[in-house]
Image (cartoon, rainbow, N blue to C red; front, side, top):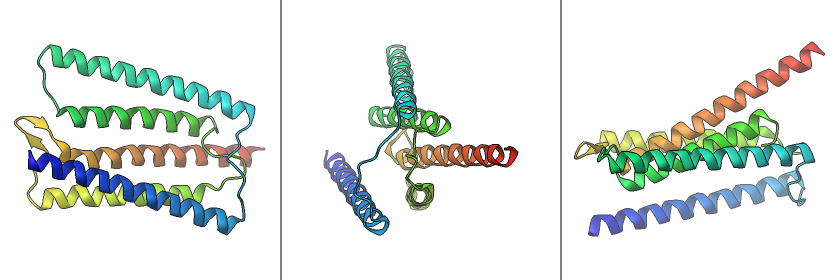
Length: 180
């Protein structure tokens, strides 16, 4: 019971640190760029984001149904918290990927590089945490199912996929500009 309390407290602390760091980074970037305007998307981007939200929602719904069906069939593959986080990572990845591919993730006035750097930083931090857990002898599997030690790897995979989609989209956009 006490281990679970420590895990929850550690998770909440980590979440607060990430939120605080994100807010600080956003404030610094806004001050540096001299922009205090709210993020504005054009009509096409708003429609594309709506499609992305819908697709991410249905991806999450299908994922939850599959997890529930596996549970009913008594096929245990991961702890409940891990299943829920992986579902969250899946739906966020779907949303971000669709938005990036439809030019609805970045506004026309925003710069991609600071966000890409932040994505890389989050990926490296989570990979480092995952590797350190493994190096400390922590197992990814408890009683034959994935445990909470895999969550950092899940976050890293999510951000790696988003980075790859961003790079692919940048290459596609560059080639389109070159062909004009």
